[in-house]
Length: 309
Image 1: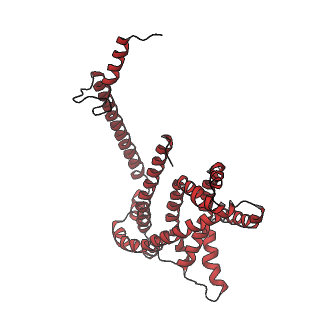
Image 2: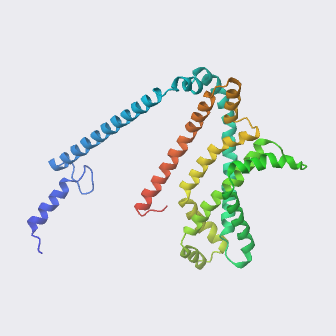
Image 3: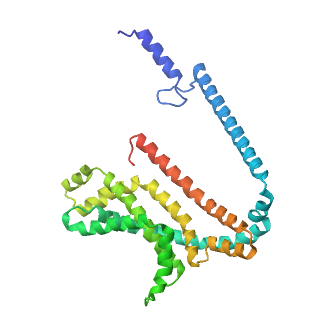
């Protein structure tokens, strides 16, 4: 089909009319077409309508939940037991003081978990029959500690190690609890790293070897950088879970945020300190969760655009 010069020029003019100001090919003093302005007004109206509907539905849901809770027969007793302002003010400083222990456990155990998990993942992906015992041990480690509930692992380490009365072995519940957390989460992180390593196409390693790199150099400079970048979101999710589970070290007697709230609750027979501790953990977790979501969305956008991930 032949396109005439007039039709081609008219089509180009329509396209130019849809260009934003300052776009490549646009002239200075560009005036948007009426069609463009109408489309933008329609989009703004839809956005305002969606925002209003979301706000109204959220408000209606909140009102319904409030009425359901307040009209419950035991609400007054529950309010006194779980939402007492006096006990909340008393517990808050103690909970914050104990939270510092949870933060230190997160920082130290997080670093150790990442290093140990990486080493286990590398051991599981070593090629060749000579490394079979190492691969078998790494697989047995991940299978065992991923299957063992964390609470049982904590009890075994925190209560079992001191019972052995070994010379030179600590009985500090904080150190023992941190060890149990590290053992469990290293198994989970190792599987995340292993999935990332195996997601790198074998041609990448082959190309590195063809350029003269050794197997170790190919793993360090070619495979691992790609594997780690791809697994950043699940690694951050594991760290979020680790941050919450640091509260379990309280079963050994460590005075963290959970244990501090438990002491006040047992003394007063009021459970408001538990609510305070829970809200503090939520406030600490939300920024990490939102950061994880941001990283995930950013990597998805780059992947969709064909960029490096």
